[in-house]
Amino acid sequence: MTQAERRIFLVRFLLNENPRYRDLTVPADETKQKTLLRSLMNIRPHCPIGEDFLTVQDAYLQEETARKGVTDITDLTPIEPGIYLWQGDITTLKCGAIVNAANSGMTGCYVPCHGCIDNAIHTYAGVQLRLACAEFMEKKGHEEETGKAKLTSAYNLPCEYVLHTVGPIITGSVTEKDRELLASCYRSCLELAQQNEIGSVAFCCISTGEFHFPNDEAAKIAVDTVRQYKGDTEVIFNVFKNVDYEIYRHLLG
Image (tube, rainbow, N blue to C red; front, top):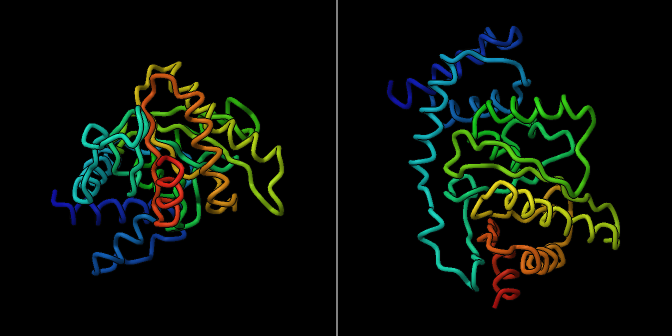
């Protein structure tokens, strides 16, 4: 199968799976096909799916990531011992684990093509990630607590694992409890990585996007907590926006 054939197969499979969308036609335009495929993956509930779909999906997603270009932690230069600063797409980063800024439901973002990191990670990991998250949430029986962390496989991402953590949501002024909960996100991820002998962790800017934690204050908490608790774990501070890169570069010297 070519990449285009894989994409059309996946779109048709997901359209046929849902009675509401069976009459929709696959657009001829490649960009529209990609948008439709991502949207269908984003809204798909956590229910079983056949190996025929997964085989094609896995080949498709791995090829898409390869085309975007993979960055290996071994090719990065630390900005201080054991700490790196890297600007780019975290779904293309090859390291021990990447951190997902999840919501309390923990099964990903269901908004089609939303710009949050939760949506991107679930999209390029594949539908298996939502199934895995739903399994441990069903066992848990209630929403995930803020400041905790959970570990899953990364499936089709180039990293080995994903650490899922729920950061505090800021609705007014930042409180001391908000600061403590954000620090707990970083600490919980590091502790879980160390328990599972994961040598490197890439942190996104937890809570600074949809959860509205001020970027500069969140970065200071992140750096201070990592310096205190990282131990032998190598840490990558992953940023996407220029403003965050400048903040972390200043904090890390």
